[in-house]
Image 1 (cartoon, chains in turn green, brown):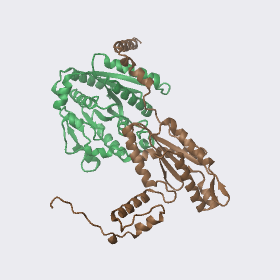
Image 2 (cartoon, rainbow over the protein chains, first blue to last red; image 1 turned 60 degrees about the horizontal axis):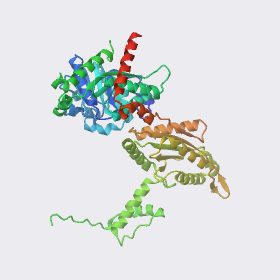
Image 3 (cartoon, helix red, strand yellow; image 1 turned 60 degrees about the vertical axis):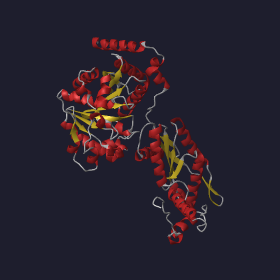
Image 4 (cartoon, rainbow over the protein chains, first blue to last red; image 1 turned 90 degrees about the vertical axis):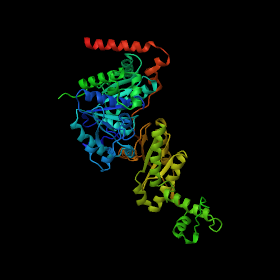
Length: 277
Length: 261
C-alpha cells in the first residue's frame, strides 16, 4: 500500500489517485483560510455524534490548524508525540466537549509540514489503524493547496470543500477543486457554503462553480465532475459569539440558524456519504 | 563597570591557520588582508574565503551540491510564500565517457569547465548553476514562468550544441546535453527530494528517448484565468443582484428536471 502511494507521486507529492481511499474518511478543506473550515469540522463532528455516530476529528493541518483553539483543548499528548515515538496513539486521542474524539497535531508537527515519504508513511499507517474504530473520520485540513493538504485529502473517500460567497474564497475554492479533479481524478466534490446571506445563495454558488468547471476543465470522457451541494450555513451572529466563548455552537446555541444548518448537514452526510454496510 | 562588555582578544599567532591559508592560497583570486594591520579583517577574510570554498565546486567554480541544496530549499520557501513559479533544470552531458576515453580526463575537465562557463552565460544572474554530480549540472531558476521555461532550456541545449570546445592543439570537439526540468508550482510547498525527483524523471526521459533534447514536466494548471474568474463572479462585479436568484432558479429547475427524468 505504501509503495503504491509512493509510485504515484505528482506535482505536489500527493498520490494521483488514492489507491485505497479509506472508507468513511471525509476531508474538510477549503481553498482559502478563514472561511470557517474548522468551525464546520468541529460542529459537524458534534452534530454527527449527536446522531449516535462514533466520530473522530483529525487535525490534518499538522499543527497549523486552529482545532485546539475552537475546541478549547490543550492536550499534553499530541500526534507529534506519536510521531516522535514519545507516546502511544491511544493516549493522543482525546474526548471533545461535543461527544466526539479528536486527535490534535500539536505545534511540533510544523516540523513535518514538509511532506517527506517517511511522514507520509507514518501518517498513512496511523490513519489506517484509526479508521476501523469509528463510523466517520473527519480530516480538518489546512487551507490552500500545499502537498500536506493534497496528501490528507487523497486519503479520504469523500471531500467537502467549504467556501464563502466572497469572490476570493470562490476563486480559491475553484482552484482547489481543479487540482482535486486534475491530480486525484476526483469526480464528486461536496460543497458547503458558509456565511450565506440568503436562502438559496449557496446552491446558486455551487451551480455557478459547476458551470465554470464544465466550461474550463476537461476531464476524461465519461468522467464528468460533479459538485454536490451539501448545504448552506447562514451568516449568524451566534457563530461569532460561540467562537469568542470558545464553545461549540451546536452545544451552546443549538437553536441558532447556523447550528440548525449544521444539523441538517450532518443528516445529509449520514444519509449520503457514509457507506452503508 | 558592571554593564560594559569585555572585548575578547584573540591572538592570531595562537590559531592554527596553516591549513586554511594553504587552502585559500590555492584560490589565486583571493587576497587576504595583512594580519599585522587588522586581525579582525584578516580573520573575516579567512572565514569568508572558507565559506566561499565550501560552496563551490573546485573544478568549475560553480555552486557545489551543498550550496545547490540550500538554494533549492530557499526557493521552495519562496514559491510557497510568493506563488511565483520556479524551474529546476537537470542537465547531463551525452556520452561523456567517450570524451574521457578518447581524449583523456584532462580533456574531460576542459569540457566540464567550458560547459560551466557557457551555462552561466545562458541564464540570469539570479539563477543558480551548480555541478550536481560528475557530468551532471543543475540550474535553479526562481521566478520563471511556465511559458518561458521551455525556451530557456532549449536555448541552453542549442548553445551547448553549437559550442566548439578546445581540448588541445587544434582539437575542437562538440558535445550535446540532455535536459530534464520541473516546476515548483505556485502555492505548493514541495520538498527538495520530490522536486529533484521530478526533474530527474524528465532527464531520464530525455536520455532514453534519444538524448540531445529537452523534456519538461507538464504540470497541472492550477491557476485561475481571468476568463474563469469572469465567469465565476462576473455578475457580482457588475453589481447585478438578479444573478443569484436567476442561477438559483436554474438550479431548482435543473433539480426538478432531474426528478422528472
